Image 1 (cartoon, rainbow, N blue to C red):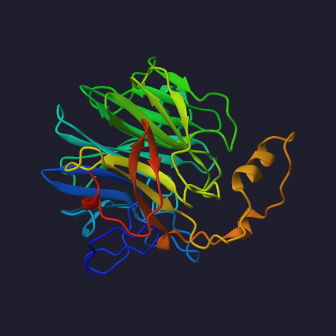
Image 2: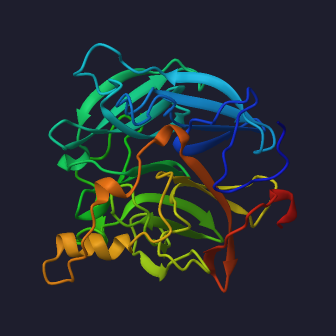
Length: 346
């Protein structure tokens, strides 16, 4: 099947006819080719308790049709202490190319058996891999490590990460991208408890400003997104509201954004890449923001909810929600389209 449009929330097959497996994905654009990579969940169904099967890469010329370039970071199958053991909670691979070292540097979020968050780092001379793990058990700035983003800005690169159940931390990377400037960091959106803790940061640049869209914290259940704007990464961030327009369920169209990128041929078109992690959400699902608010704040109404029975967590068939971001009165907005083409936007 050859695609000529995006179909948010519908199954998306690669050029071999298989489901695309690049969850919590990110985008690199090199020499006119788009590269989409992310968590390979092909074996992560409800029967065999496989959290991931490595990191998989795809390439495309048009953003609609994707060629499988293979697994660029293979899972560890025997060593249970490895950060990339197939049942370890490895999430959100993010790659930056370092011009000074000539290496592609991949960061990984790792959740240990004791639910402590760490970073692991892998490198490769080629984007197509293979990547090899060179650093493990790393907690930047001495903090527990949660959902994150790596981003370049001019001649510097930054790490933005969630300090779980607390705040977002922004800190410059070292020149080799293998760590952070340990004493140089700032904390934002501080002292918030779930569901209001900000996680899953995704940033982009527009007309001299930096924009960030984040998710609340409700496990894999979708919740409202929040956008903010700043003049610099470690400057003052101003919250400017929920970007999802016309969304009535407080679920960001049942998805969580992982990456936002600018289309190289369209000056004002940004694309939000998101995952619909839970595959069979019921129509009468409760407002999960209110459910989690009651869980973490005894002064709030306690809403009964057996979250474990609410849905199957079969991420091998989780779908993607890619939608355009447009600016209205200087504010980023995301509207729902059953079908859309990037060629139709300016």
